[in-house]
Amino acid sequence: MNKNEIKNGLRDIGLKRGDIVILHSSLSSIGHVKGGADTVINAFLETIGEAGTLVVPVFDKLGIITETLKQRPNAIVSDCPLGTVAAIGADAEFICRDHWRAATVHGHGTPYLKIAELGGYVCLLGVDQDRNTTMHTVEALLELPYLNDISAKVDTSDGKHEATWKYYPGPHRDFIGLDRKLLDGGIMRVGKIGNAVTRLMKSRELIEFLTKIGTENPAFCLCDNPNCADCVKQRAALRRAELAREPFKFAVASSVAGHYVPEIIDNLKTAGVDYVELDMLRGHPAHTLDSAILKTAAAEFKANHINVSGLRLPAIPTDFPTIIALLKTINISRLLMPLSSDAAIFAKQAVAASIELVFYNLGVTGNYASRIMNQLAVGKESAAGFAFSPANFARIGEKPFLESFQQGKFRKYITQLDIEDALFDGSSALPGNGNAEIRELVSILRCASFSGYMTISGINRSFGSARELAEQFLSL
Ligand SMILES: [Zn+2]
Image 1: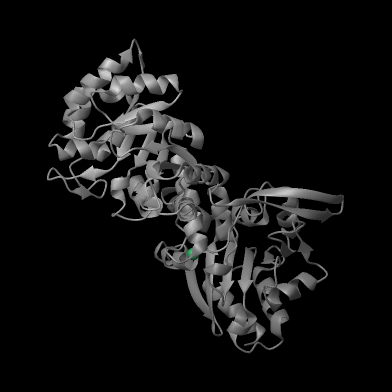
Image 2: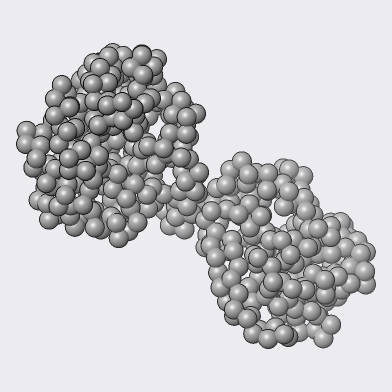
């Protein structure tokens, strides 16, 4: 290839005089070029003319073309140590100016967005979308929750500074997977220069198109390989951010998350969940374990920023004072147990010990449960809360939302909704696939800004991992 052949190729794909273009390239992908990198750079500069501007990223070893352009005496290099670009042409100074002063490396006030605002192009010459730095502009503009702050030293003409930029991109992303969308969306032209497949996109159109996709699906540029630790972690950050926007607290039963504490912590982190309900540990009901084991477990959760939402008893205890003493020893102040006709007696002892007692329905009708809960109410205050178990109401043949919830007037007692499902025949189901009217219950509580717990209860443990069940809950 010689310079004129490259110029013809650039004109064919749509570049013209006065254009601004950021170029990501691989010289070797073109094939043999007479005169090497300088020939390619000259072809671009002559195509866009003196009114145009050629920009290349120089923040890493990104190929001989970028290195060669950067060394030219008329090249201007942006002053940000991250995402650095070099530029030659009419708008080079404006594009590179004050890069380090921007709040992010790739967003507002950076060369990448300035190129878009000036009507410029992104050109990928023999490289794929993985090299397209403007993708980070889309992520930064969307302020995606998996992005992080980053700090570095800056050395500028007016002195040394220490700066922090927000929304800096993480490790792996699936930008290659967006290529087809850009082509189908009419955002990208594809041609060939020598052997180099060459893509040209209007930067502004690229950003607007992907911003729309990313607004609907914040995971749009993450891969869905379950073994990609980077994207699993980034998806957890998206789920955590989505859950944090809700007034309720989202918890998962320990028995769903695993057998042992480190495993449970790992799985909750992967799921993006900050609350755990202690029902089982090491394959046993948690309250039957030695108090020293439970105390250590509670401390480990706390050290890993996982809050214990409560201890759940699977049955009515024979010796309630022992349970109260256990809670005191292990520093957990919330207890869940089945509702019974002795509720008032338990509630009195719990109040005296400053334990928050929460009853859940097990083998009782909505009518019975609401009658007992009414008896616990003293004025507007209730001596105990209610954890509504829709699956257990479905199991006794009631429609949990239409009958149990509405007729029982449970709204005023509910401090927890168990996210679980069951069929009228008694068998458990994946939340949303049974007769427990989970969607209706979640929806009606959200309408009232419910601030209690929504808990993936232990009966879900055969339906998937904490991550899969959190995902299922969000899709509900
Ligand atoms: Zn990935």
